[in-house]
Structure formats: C-alpha cells, structure tokens
Length: 523
Image (cartoon, rainbow, N blue to C red):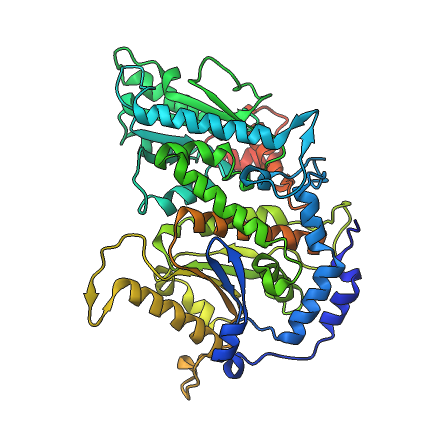
C-alpha cells in the first residue's frame, strides 16, 4: 500500500488545473438536488447539491480517491493493520460495532471476541442494576449515573446521551463531570443523592490527571456527606485498559475494558460509551446505536464515491480545503438533541487531522484539517450566521436535519408546527447561502456562493445517531489518508500537560515565563 503526499498525486495536479467554476445561483436546480446525493447508512442520506462541485470535479475527485487507494486503506484499518504509525498501533473502533474485515488478533487474542465479551459484561451489569439486583451500599436502588472523564471519555458519550434522552425511556438519569475546574464537579454533585448514584470513572491509562482529580473530589464529597453505611467502592465502576492501575481494583464495584487500539475520540462505541449509555437507556438502545454505526461502516466500503457518503463528504472537504482555500467548516444540526455533537466533532476532526507532518514525520507543503465549530439551528441563526452570510471568509457548512421530531407533541401555530418551522428554516438557509440576494443597498446584499451539504433522515434515533457518528468518523479517516497524515495520535495535547505538571511541582527550575504567569494566578 502506497502512502503518498497529496501534492505528488497526478489527480491532485489535474484538480488544481480545473477552470470550471460552479455558479450555485444558476445550477442549484431540482434535478441537481435529486441527483447529487449518496446513501450514508442507518436511514441517512448525504446531499451535496449545494456544494460548489459538478460532474467534472466529482470525476477528478474519484480519480484522486482511487489513486490514493482510500477504500483499500480503509479495508486495512478493518483488517487490523498497524495504521497508527506514531504509536505503532492498530485502529479498531470499527471492530466494536461489527466484523467487516478479517479476524483481528494481537498476542494470540481475538480482539473482536474481546470487545464482544466486554459488551456482554456491560449488558449483564446494566440489567442487574436496572432490576435492582445490584444496589447502592445502603440498599437503595441506583437511579443516576455520572460519567467522570475528559476529552474522548466525555465529549462523545455526553453528546450521545443528550441526543437520546428525549426519545427513549431513561432508566438512569445521566450526568457528566469532565473539567478539572471544581465548579464543574460541585455543580453536578450538588444535585445528586449519593446513595442512589453510580459513578463511571473513565481513563484508558488510569493516570489521567483531571479524571483522577475529579474522582478524588467525588470521594471527598461523599465522605463529607457522612452517610451511615455508605461505601464509595460500591458506587463506582472503572472503564480502563487491562494494564491500568484501575483494572480489577477493589476500590471499584467492577471494571470494564478497552485497549490502546481505540483512541479516546473514537471510543463512543466501546465500553467508554457503552457503560453509561447502557445504564442510562438499556443495552437494547446501545445495540441499535452500534447497528447504525455498522450500517455507515458498510456504506463506506463502496468504491464509487457517488454511492459512498463518507467518501464523498471527505473528498469535497479536501477540494474546499486545498483548492478553494477554505479553512473552516461549520456543523449545523437542526436538532436540539444534537446540541453537543459539534463539540464532539471538533475534537474528533481537529485532534485527528490537525497535523503539519506526514506519516513519516516529514513537513507538509499543503493545508490539512480545517477548524470545526457549530451550534444547533435555529439558535445559530441568531448568533454567528451573520458572518457566514456576509463575512469576508467563505465557510463551508454541514447541515443535519430530520423530518420528524423526537417528541411527538407539537403545536400548530400560524398554519405550521414548530417542527415544520424548524425544517423551513433549514432549507431556507441552504438556499440563502447558495443563491444569496442582490440589493442596491450593499448592506443588504447577499453574495451567495456559500457552499453547504445536508445529512438528513426520518428521525434521530439510536440507529441513525450511530450512523451519523460513524459517517463523520469515516470522513475524517478518509481525509487523513488523502493528506497522508496519521489521524490516530495526538501529540499536540502532550506539551501543555508536561508544563502544567512543572507548574504544580514548582521549584527554581521552572521556565521564567511559566513562573511569571503562575505568580499572576497565585498558583
């Protein structure tokens, strides 16, 4: 398998030579809207009619995908090759939701069997908690679950929990503690009954500073509560690796395992998301979530990018980044349930492809991952859309929408329901960004030509949510292969951690600037 820089590829040189410009004002027709779409799995469809591409550009993007062997490299991921060159690791988050490639073994252990075993253990554990067979230390039914973790141990699971809490019966109310800021933990803990709460401590290494600090914060709060007969070890489980200091400790009611082959930002379909989501909604809901992710993973195997939504999304993104020069992408879900989904994608995309060297550690001469941001519509319309419509920078947009709301009750007001108003705003924005509006008053003139895509489905369910998550995971993977970067390490987060430890340790050896800023904040 060849891993080549983007600027060495014949198809990329052909793409740079294309003189065709796409006038969305003229070309965004009904025929184009119906034709420019691709299946995304899980009942979702990716529509790219409002993107600044045409058949010629799409044809060259197909050549680029083929030349860079994107689907073949995706299959190598599924088959357990050591794709993470920075850490010499496999990349196996796909394996947590179904066997698409060959058996993956490591040190004589079948890793698919390992992940299935953990899922079965989580299923059995959550069932016992729901049935009251596992109770709190004072004999009361556990009705609340709190996940303690940061980064990928928080952003993905939190976004998924919020996406599902309105459509499914909540077996256990969920909360999350991530920030080492004591105000975060205090705000959550102040609402809890410790006797009926189960804490899920998530740290693959078992040494994450913020997570352990929050664990100790929780333990001290429970001690200060002076609850007769309360034993914190009966109210906390660990999600970690088998080699971590947390594994099998008698300080935890149980331990569930992941491994180094699943990065934090890709861990929502592993035990990292599985424990909290199964406890919150039941294992059947989590199973549907995994099934949806598997649907999208299967769709990503298609060589023809016109039939492969993740691949098409990725290739258009490369075109926008490396040919059109757009440095940002806004993710705009028209669903309040997806309120934290852009924040999760922010980590997944920017931590994966925010690289300036290739897989061999050589400097790159072209741009890689864009800045990702977003908020749900229609809130965002009243916030930052002004810049998106009339600002000096063109920002590609990724809209997400659903035909039906999650909660059936709605109000018909002024001839339309709230869900219809939501959808009307969504389609209006797509067309407004693409076609604009001419006005003699330049302050009221909209230039248009602002490209967007739309991922849509019938309703946001566990299955469609799983497919949505996997779509973006696979998009990021494909783009990383196009740019020839290692999308699966995150060295950029390490330096700050090292310096923070130096500050906390103090001493005369501290860097002068560190000492000066530390004095400002009285550390």
